[in-house]
Length: 202
Image 1: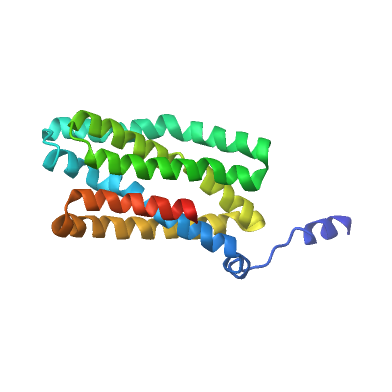
Image 2: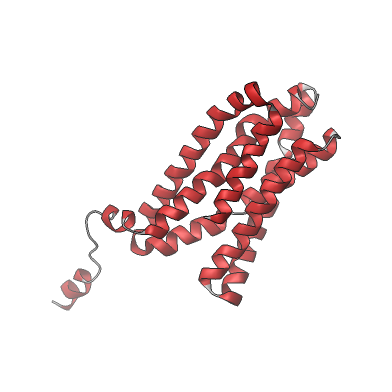
């Protein structure tokens, strides 16, 4: 009998979506992640083309340098997660979950625009790599926050947020070549500055 009562206390509603979709914070976080992912997908799908077509790197060197942003991300992402935890301990979860990703989003947006403007191609790839590193450094904060909001339904919350992120990637992948064709690469990369700023504000 006691075992039955203990198990009954752990039974969750069959459909978590009514709970998740009813949380305003979950919608704000997901839309923010959509804008964040827009910039990230520029690096995934269009950086190599930019380096070879605009910056004049050979196919081989372009491939080599296109990997550097993800090397930066490999180093900076765990650092971002550590800083997010540090700020949560020092300032509380609400402020701590905001400080690190907002700073990283603003830095990433600034550096992607600077990378498009700077003349030297080697400085450009260095600056763009920093931008990619900063945008990847937001991942820990986003996923920890989705778990905080979702609580017992953290899987559904993460799925919702990631769906929005993939949607941002789809828009980015389709929109960048259109912007390049009509306005040039500065506008295309600069659109990532706009979305990173919007993500930070959200």
